[in-house]
Image 1 (cartoon, rainbow over the protein chains, first blue to last red):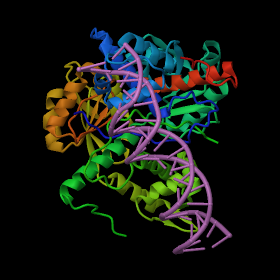
Image 2: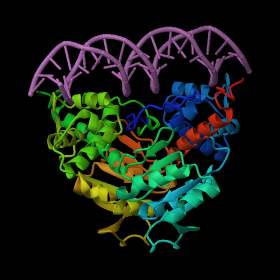
Image 3: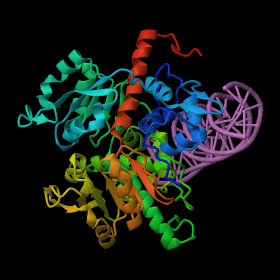
Image 4: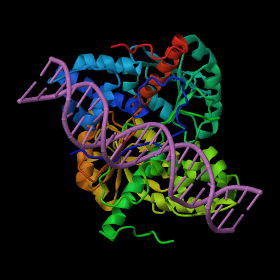
Amino acid sequence: MSSTLAQPDAGDQPGDRSWDGGIPEATVARLPVYLRALYALAERGVTTVASDELATAAGVNSAKLRKDLSHLGSYGIRGVGYDVDYLVYQVSRALGLTQSWPVVIVGAGNLGRALANYGGFASRGFRIAALLDSDPALVGRKIGRLVVSHADELEAVVASQNVAIGAIATPAASAQAVCDRLVAAGVTSILNFAPLVLTVPDGVDVRKVDLSIELQILAFHAQRRSAARVGQLAGPAVAEA
Amino acid sequence: MSSTLAQPDAGDQPGDRSWDGGIPEATVARLPVYLRALYALAERGVTTVASDELATAAGVNSAKLRKDLSHLGSYGIRGVGYDVDYLVYQVSRALGLTQSWPVVIVGAGNLGRALANYGGFASRGFRIAALLDSDPALVGRKIGRLVVSHADELEAVVASQNVAIGAIATPAASAQAVCDRLVAAGVTSILNFAPLVLTVPDGVDVRKVDLSIELQILAFHAQRRSAARVGQLAGPAVAEA
DNA sequence: TTATGTGAACTAATTCACAGCT
DNA sequence: AGCTGTGAATTAGTTCACATAA
């Protein structure tokens, strides 16, 4: 049960980082999912979990889970499974969540506000260092327990709070400029919500969250399903030259 | 320039769809990026584009771009490049965007409202069929040019408007129940914003958008960078058994 | 010439299947 | 007896490099 399609994302150039930490990208992308499943188990009072159960909870198969975890070390007990708390700790450590990362959010529009209000943000390993906007009408406004600061503060906030992660929630038109300022200020990890491809120097890590791309991928599969229903077992319907 | 790390996403089980349309998943995930770059070019009045330029605009290398496009057909002109408008049409067609997909958004909290207000939503190929919430305080409220309907309407909206795509923007606690109702009503594509793994029957396609997962992936790389800075060219620092 | 389209080579990720530890 | 950890096999994705067509 619970079979969904694979979910690769539009990929950028492969990382040409000198030392790559030994953990494959595909594994890194799944560790947060395991971590969430582990927290859910811990909350239910489960102390030990086998790879099958954890894999099911995370929506992957158990061989993949075990191979993924094996990249962090050998933290399971044969014949038994994994100690939930210990594994939480090890996965957190691998992801760098034993420290708390200050994040600056640029853009206090609908999305920026939604981000600032998002509970899971501060929950584990992250805190919002500042919520910035250049619109004077928004500056000073309270969003959750934050006050919107002026975008001019960007460099000061990054420097004083040692911000390594920036989230860009501005309109597409200003996103590249904001990105350039973040990078110049020393931010090396960027989460981009603006619908455009950002250009950054080597050594800066960009991830994008893009609603319309996700919708378009869903549309592709939805279309494929209806085409299959019409063509029934007819094979490629629109494939002639 | 513009080198970012690869960005795979946490993958679910591989698609076991009978006929898979011939287009690799990784390619499908990039087509929306190409499409956006093409629209940007078209707006600037560019009529023809070579694979190098389009690849740069999309943040991939040109060999990948050409191989991706070759899965749709042979729409370029050797020695010249691609006709922008024609390629827009072909990519749109491949993605199923020549029709307009009605989407139902469940959850009118911060995120649901941000989605409903998101301009790019309606822009190309999608329209919001309904914005639903079960909170009586929200029902009837105007968000952009939409009015929030009661979640009880879900089945009726899906049936009457032939909705194939649902977006879940509810708290995690109610997300699975909402998902089950969407699936029962006939929705086969789901965009999940709630921070949990949804369980769905075979044949239903789920994609997730998850802020904290993205942040955690960034944290991993940020950590790796600072570790590298400390260890300098020391190789794996924390790798003993 | 010039830039596409694509076999061939390569690299990454997944899955299998079982040896080995508890 | 049971479940992890992992080599080996498989599959998917990327990049190279060039024949081919405009």
